[in-house]
Image 1 (tube, rainbow, N blue to C red):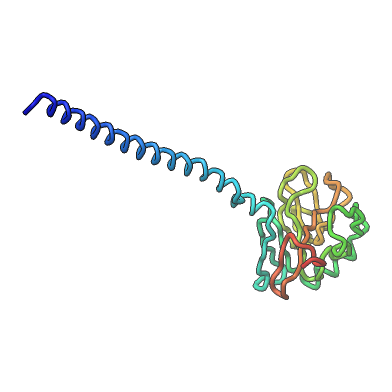
Image 2 (cartoon, helix red, strand yellow):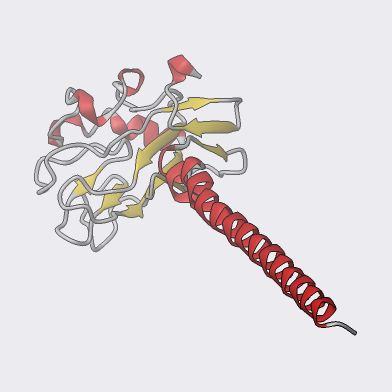
Length: 209
């Protein structure tokens, strides 16, 4: 075999090695580029989708109140706060008209505390059902539901409602604050509407339902 033949074979060998290196480098670069693109796209796509917490923070909440017995209270979470639904008895509704003298805002004149359609003695669309935010308007504690009449620890004047154990604020069965309470305003009535006789939607006004 001549020297020139050996030189030609060596050159071809180097050329094959160079081609192999180029193919490897191109392939590796493509893979890295693809991975980098995916890595960039994932957080971008995720940022466009609303988080579960964000949806829960402002989304209306539907609830079934059909199984609620007279005198009972149920709790629903809405925007991170408890919303109470109470099915009031006829006796509870009658007492509401008897306790107005001892209340700070008996006619719910502070409009920010309830929608216009709840500005009545019952503070509700349907007198039977009260829907109210379960947060004391004094310092944000959660009052206790006390529907019984004249219990020993609350006194003979107690006609049923909510008692806040933190600082002693009292609210009647419409969520109206008593004159002697440190809380300055009635409990808040959220926007809500009826989808049927037994289903409500919290977060959407009745007019917009």
